[in-house]
Length: 127
Image 1 (cartoon, helix red, strand yellow):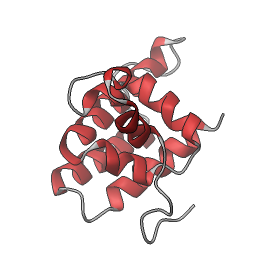
Image 2 (cartoon, helix red, strand yellow):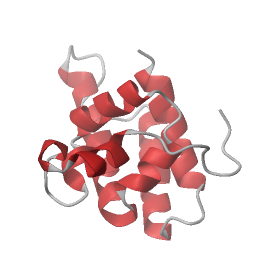
Image 3 (cartoon, one colour):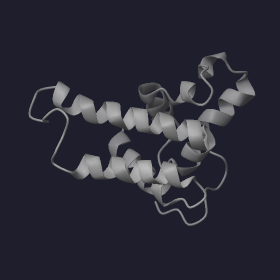
Image 4 (cartoon, helix red, strand yellow):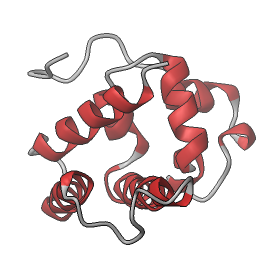
């Protein structure tokens, strides 16, 4: 599965989307800067825990994006497969971030709307 490259493209697309609130785009820009800078909360050379801080910060940031912009915005910009989005949602808790409920508790049409890409995509998105 290509989760990491798809995640990087997702972050870039969301940060460039002028329809999202400015605070969301700034937050995403700061996240991308944090991920490329060599300074970390926990040094990456420490086994397992060194990369855990990056994953936790990404998860918290994506949850805050979903709360402010909606799961639909994240889903519309997701460049990967439906399975990849489902994995991302489970790992980061996006399926619960939108309104505090689990996607499993939603009626089937709503669950389908969360996890399946609408036909076409946002205009101007690169692949």
